[in-house]
Length: 318
Image (cartoon, rainbow, N blue to C red; front, side, top):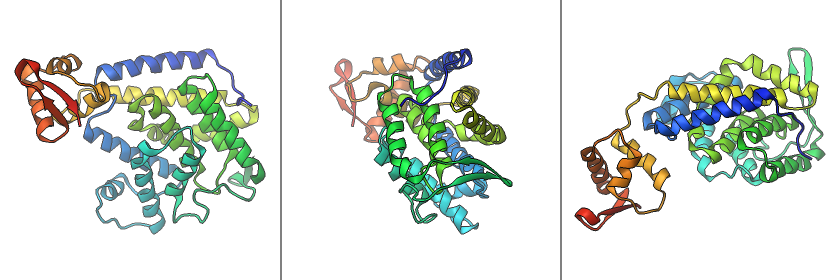
């Protein structure tokens, strides 16, 4: 069955605005942000996603762990961060449409934290806020069929990726397939679905905006439960996605280095041969001399291979 929700005028407007921002991101060569910005945003993502779950480590401590430096803190919190670093570094190897990949990611994320890392829960669970039970998750014998249905929706439905990512996030939280780690898995998998459509989503700190609006995040999940459909949650998450793209565009003045430009161009040209003229068409804001220096740097670093000479020179990524 297709998960229940309604396409509202607000959803359509948000999708149109997000599409416009993605075009602006590509024009600004930010579809894969500069190295330092990628690192900064990845750290913000890990910090915010785990802080939502009660982790106490600071951005500075997480930065130290990313850089393999020693950190003093609660052992559980440190392990949560190390696991999150591993799973985000592993994103390229995860298939957003594979249930097995989903369980593999949970295993990486929760190893050492729970005994059933990577496995569906085998007992009932409820979500408690204060003294009130706010959600009773489906029984354990229903989990595999429900998750299979959800992944079939991801793979087969004609909805655009923006809606699918939000629907998956909400439905996964409702199903609550694991004993622990469901919140961070929902946010991680939405990122993975979005990344499959546009590379920029890998490095957008969407979780930072969710953390800022954490109370509303849980309210919308609860309201969607009460209504029996994810429409409100889709609207909420599309607003978050739009705001995160606008935040990225606000730092578009960050200068790209030669390494950044060469790295970005790989995603444009892929395995095809190209010339300096082709490279310049992609970076109209740089001079021919700068393009030559970029390509010389890439050849020397073994990133691309040079073929021919003078007017016949072509390049190709290794």
